[in-house]
Length: 443
Image 1 (tube, one colour):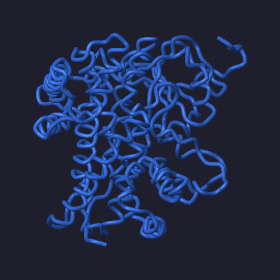
Image 2 (cartoon, rainbow, N blue to C red):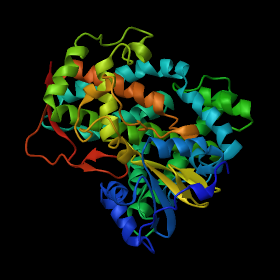
Image 3 (tube, rainbow, N blue to C red):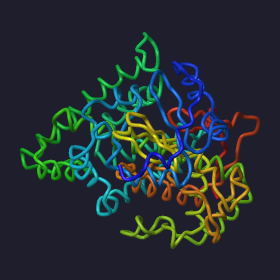
Image 4 (cartoon, helix red, strand yellow):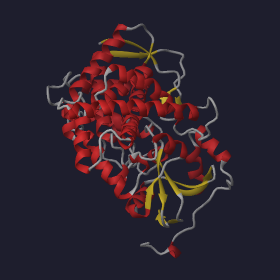
């Protein structure tokens, strides 16, 4: 403890006792955290289903949390912990976490992204052709979800179409159980997700055994990154094909799929709702090549070459981050923005609330990508979390989103179908409730 507790303010606490009503409000009310921040300040405590929880927002509190990394550990709600599994990287801490993170991280290194990018470009063109060849209107969200799943399942893990399709159905069921109430009542989303988890692990185990057999016979592994994972596992002394690795692949599917699909849907929704900003972005896209030159897809649309695209992506991530927050548990008392937070508290970093809070701008509720090109103070952006547990799939997600945005918007013109519900479902990640109905045509 590197601070004097006597100099800190006590933690403001809501009157919640059991936390049942707080939990229901937390799951249903998109303004849950923000309304309480306005009442109690940037650091406050409450109770969610019996768990003493501290919500924080703002650059000061978040920076203080990251600076005291040795005093906290990773934490997830019970439903997430159970569905990811006890061996998952997300549920590990300390040296154990760091060793596995280094191994799994090889799947998202720059050299790996360069390997994946031609297949991602091909999937973008395939989706464009599918949208042009289908009946109108078309629900864009399901198309984008399948695209995102194909990238992680085929391009990264090298799964064949049969395994990919079987996994996709169960994975959708599994995702719906995340962040649900952890009661396995028959037919509930959580109970169905637990059953889907078992089928997913069985299928992933079979895929790993297939890869292990190919490696033992001296045959090349299927396309994808399993050889990178296998090499890292050998180096770390972890056998390919055990339950540990299957749970890491389950986490990778989630990290590379659900949040990316959400970001793609929210990007297109925001642009279609703001035609002036779409036209502004289109001016830049018209000067970019598609497809990118061989070997250049990873860098072709980065911020220095496509600043307006980068600004649009940042603005979408600011207003509709793919996850609303991330968690840590305090192992000892810590100081956050001048407030004393006791040990054994779950700290939730409220990403969505922090993104709409800051000084220097008075229009933080407005979609204005140009703010990220101007020299002005903006909020701290943490759409992929932060610190030593920042999302492993961040680099792949950013590459995938940039490639799809350029490839799709250069080849298609898309109009919103009128009289549809464009409000967002927030669990497990933001997505238009009605599927985002559009009418695509060739540009």
